[in-house]
Image (tube, rainbow, N blue to C red; front, side, top):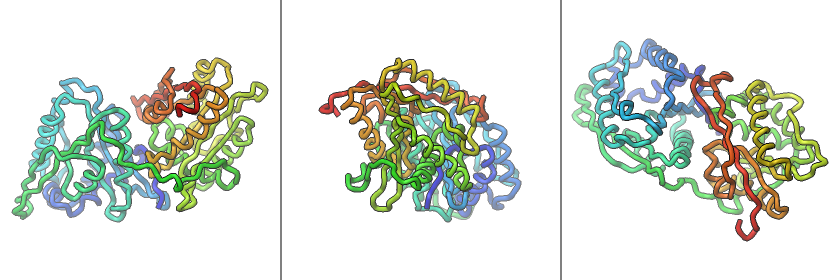
Length: 434
């Protein structure tokens, strides 16, 4: 089964609310909150509320996982990156709106108790708050929830912010597995639904400095090789599309729909064209147990002044946000020209890994392939990267030299969301240092 992971789109608000309703059906707390069951008017209320405030909260992040085969959303997470709030913000009690048919007294009590406990534990700190993580009942225990957690954990590590959540008992083992620790409890009285028991929600924190849960794959599991077969390029296009879903900028530049065969094939044709350029080197990482291409990189060896630099593709893939792409790559190209100063260099154009294979050492293998050659030739290396990848690149000796900020709202993305791309340069090293 193949997943597509990426930011929730505005057009997906309705189906994701349907997913939430189905995920919580039959739960004791859900029965307490909506004693008459879920109704279409309730779901319409939540959809209208999401659309009303869409793009207005700078802290919110919404990520979903799709089943590539069916196109259905099968898991969803809602979390907040509270990195720089004033005291007046984190002390302000939320004012939720509940639909008709809801047990509003019980709902307000739940919200208030959760807010007070969270404020008590995290008062004045910068942190990430996981407000919601749900998986469709038919897709539980298949790894979708872990993919969403690992997306957030990557920010937890890159931003060095702890993650806070309140877990229901059935989710406890998943969170413990991913490095969360119990710090407190919130009791929930279920007597109104005929239960003599008190439900306990567990307050948990994943520390900012906790190591990655992923372990490197064994050396004989992955093979790094050049792309020699044209049939591989379709696989490369699909890997890239899935990897790009975690980047607001890249998913807006290249919103490729894997369910439409012409879209990845068009991108594959671009890669075939690009691979024919004299400076281009495309290498792949193959999982030897499955034969699947799980990651790849494109290096441009810009060390021969007689070779004309690679230009735009002859034709963009369907769905490409061409105005944004040409604007962004023009800006980022000018930054590269500025910092390489016309000197011979290696340019890491692309590095992408399937989400389920990330943080397992594969990207490091693809990096080392190009860096060893650059070091042997005494050449500088250049790349532009999202902030989430900085830890990896700095580990290999790259230094930040510049950045480009892109207002995504200007190009059809979420209003008020600005994505940053960081420019990095690496000087050649002695091979003994690597």
